[in-house]
Structures are given as C-alpha cells and as structure tokens.
Length: 276
Image (cartoon, rainbow, N blue to C red; front, top):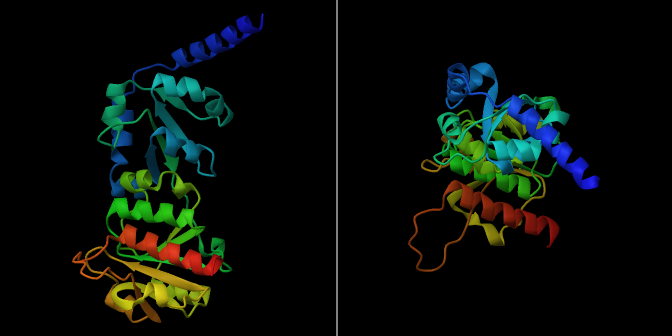
C-alpha cells in the first residue's frame, strides 16, 4: 500500500509537470537573452543564475525569484520546493536551455531573480574587515573575490563604479552562490571610509610592506586594485599602508591576478585576527 501511495504521489507530480511542458516562446527567449547585457539588467532590475548549485543556493536565500527554466529531471526533483516558493517554472529542452543560457555549456537550470538593492543603513559598521574593489573588471576575478569574502566571513563588499557588473552572468556563476550572502554596494572609497569612520586603509600593491611581517590592524578597509592598472591614483592617496605578497627568491612572475592576491591577503588577515 505504501509503495502504491508513493507511486501515486510521484505520478501526480509528473502529471503536474507535464501540464507545464510547453515550448518556451520567442518572446521569453528574447527577454531572457536581453539579461545577458548590463543595459537591460540595470533597466529591468533582474539577473540570471545558472546551474543546480548556484540556483539552489539562491532559492534558499532572501533573493526574490521571478521564474525558472529547467530540464524535466531538475524540475521533477525540485517541484515541491518550487511549489512552496510559489515559483513560476517551465520545463525546457536542452536546445531551449542552450538558446537562453549565457554559458558555453548550459547546466540543467536557469533562473531569473530580482537584483537585491542594499543601502547604507544595511551596512554593518561594527564588522572588523571591509573589502573595497577598485576597478576589478574581470568577471571571473570579481566572482571569485566575492566567494573568498564569503569564505572568510566578510558579508559586505564595496566596489568602485569601474568594476565589473556584479550581476554579470560570469560574475554570478563564479560566486557559486556566495552572492546570496554577501552584500555588494557601489560607492567611492572616500565615502565608505567616512561612513565607517575608519582611518586604517590598506592597499594591495607590488611595492608595499611585506604582508607576513606586517602587524595588520583588526579594523580596516582592504583595497584591491585593477588587474592591469592597480589602485587608482585618487584612492592611492587615501591609503594609510601599502602591503604586498612577497615573491620567492628568483621568482620571475610579474604579478598575481586580483582574485589570487585577494585570497592570499584575506587568509593572512584571518590568521592574524584568529590564530596569532
């Protein structure tokens, strides 16, 4: 009897899914594809997320879901959650998913979310370490930095207006869901320092003080510059200390990319604050 009831429950879910198994319209494809571009993301206040891992993280967060397009297996597996969230969902074929995806290899599901908007009132000024990104333009680096911030417990990251768009599909994908937990605000560095009332502003540079011999302040702003140009001249003037990652003797690598450098520096901050 129990087996029969389980079969009936699954059959009814499948029937419900089949009822929504309609071809995605040209208009839907057009609207979703438009979200690949910053102009339309900003205008509509929406963004897309792709893949089971990222979408699942977002569905279990405070982000507002608009609609979901998934392969039948994914929708079947997640139907109860979709019903609980009262989320409009559509079954897509692999060909349809390919047409709306921003990825080279689409991965089971694509979801449309509302862009969260954070204000100064939501900034936790009591936090110890704040991260400021100055002109980080590579989406992959941007997303990885957000993920590293999440790993090391930094729940708010500030950006200059010259950074990559936080809701660029490549940024969203690279965060692997951390964007649901890290608040992103675009502000000038001078505004942030004034708002936080912080005087210790550290900048990652090639000619700075050795990271591992520096006594790092517990309460400070860490500035990470552009991959190609470093920290802007205006923001360099605001730095109280420049720090750098020492290279092994004989090393000839010109520099580290922004995401790798940020990860190393955050790790050392974390070590000094918690294990020194």
